[in-house]
Length: 563
Ligand SMILES: *[C@@H]1O[C@H](CO)[C@@H](O)[C@H](O)[C@H]1NC(C)=O
Ligand SMILES: *[C@@H]1O[C@H](CO)[C@@H](O)[C@H](O)[C@H]1NC(C)=O
Ligand SMILES: *[C@@H]1O[C@H](CO)[C@@H](O)[C@H](O)[C@H]1NC(C)=O
Image 1 (tube, rainbow, N blue to C red):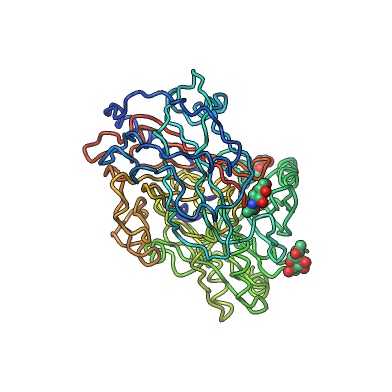
Image 2 (cartoon, helix red, strand yellow; image 1 turned 90 degrees about the horizontal axis):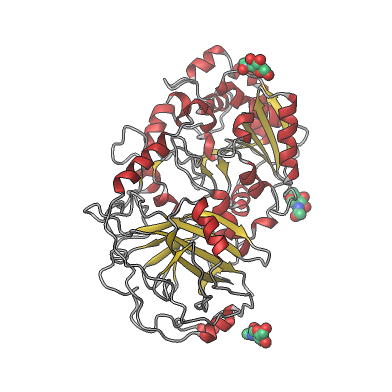
């Protein structure tokens, strides 16, 4: 793996389809399970369609218990017996949203999703509205809603058929804090430096444009004051111009330069510091930030607030360790750059002045841990050998040196200040730009916040909807070990940062989840999220290997803004 262990843009040659192939293989093995649920067309008894959240609440009638979910649950109901469609007490406190709710079957949309997500033509489809209720309350890792997630029997749709519209069930009501919206972030204290290649910048699988637009603009095409300095390895003038145009077009304040292909990668990384320091925009900023092209800042207000606790006039070197203690033993005690490294101007000055002596052959050699020269190490040595400054740990930054299914991290109710390694290859695949869409309707705190329903569903907002058919008899306060550290797993590599993790529920029949694939902010300010589950997902089998559900499934959540 060479130097790829923690600098994603160093693994160009590693970008392969290995992970995908492995997953496909497992999927193939999982096919042939038992069909647990009989065919059941959409019930169209309820042809009336509520026109608003408020009307839907008024329209609600008590229903008999739901039909079998067919997902391995012990009984035949969705949890709470009887009257489950009624709002929990406190209906009167529900915000008075007049947003239109529609629960018809838009077959064009469903067909598009079926193809986009490679589902079978017949699949389960559940649509649910969630009314955001912004209150003067702190963010909770998990909030119990007291309402059922499932109201009726699960609908099965065939993309070749048509269905009558139905009344929308009353929305779930999600109390959340009044955290700031991404559109109001002010990043003018920050200048960011990223080094990558034009190929990675333009490849749809690795292009960071959407992600950058989240934390460098107001989401409406205007800069939020943050400055980006992008270095493209040996790019042509045309490529530099094209990259600059693409970023400027989405509102990002950017300068694009060519980086010298004759420098070793670790030195190109170190060179970001003098590049930012000497940049005309650099000296007026408080923080010079070095990150990777797959570093993401989900909550910019929170990040800026946290950094405001440090005195930027003093030399400050702020970052975080790898989660894997092996990587600290292997590479040393320094900021692991993919999580973001924050340098105050006085530290950037030191590195810039000592740049030439920090990048000699000897220093390059000293930064080679056997995994190739490491940029993070060269930077640490440059600072430590030329000053008394030591790293300040900011634990809410995440390098994410995790392998396998990342669900246990994203479903932990966490509010991370950075994310990394989410573009697949040897690392995990995640879609943080989509995950954070919901923050536009309910504030930054809302992203990845969990909502637990009375019938044992947990919405990890933006990431997944998980159902626990045997109940939630484990500690939601602990990370689920769905992932594992890099090779040389001693069983406790990650514990110093994550705490000991609870056992994975993969293949136990106790958990089944729909993972977010896409989200969008709608014209009316609501946010639509599309969560998808494949019937042959290797994770969701019973202990005997049979699939928990023989059908694919989509859950569509629509988050309604507070009145
Ligand atoms: C709810 O909305 C209706 C119609 O828009 C309005 O007449 C009523 O005063 C509102 N009630 C509250 C509590 O806001
Ligand atoms: C953003 O922050 C800068 C520096 O702290 C300040 O000068 C500026 O007025 C702020 N902009 C807005 C729109 O609040
Ligand atoms: C840089 O790009 C040019 C073509 O634009 C190519 O000829 C040259 O070999 C490249 N240099 C390196 C070191 O990759």
